[in-house]
Length: 117
Image 1 (cartoon, rainbow, N blue to C red):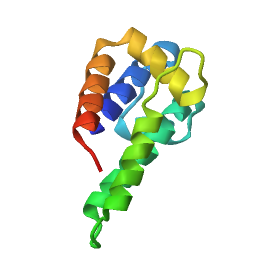
Image 2 (image 1 turned 180 degrees about the horizontal axis):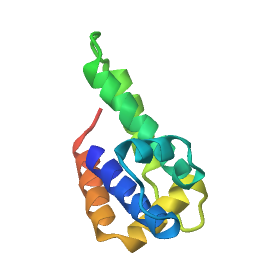
Image 3 (image 1 turned 90 degrees about the vertical axis):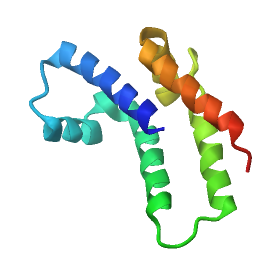
């Protein structure tokens, strides 16, 4: 998930910089990712990545039900759609334009098929 998330962030950063000029530094980029409408479509994935990270770092044991819920959310989110809106539409576009996104997507999908909860 982290690789896919980073690949999508890189994809959007390139587009943003083509349209608006170079982003000054990592802090400025983070601020844009968190607040600029250009990056809004990525926020559902960003939130999911944070939740997974928090689950892994939690002091309390993660239950099978917690894991199953997150996996269901991941599977539900990673459904690109040409006719969709928001994340699914933009994700479809990223898959059409960037081989790195296709590879990262395929890797996550493969892992998801190996996991059964």
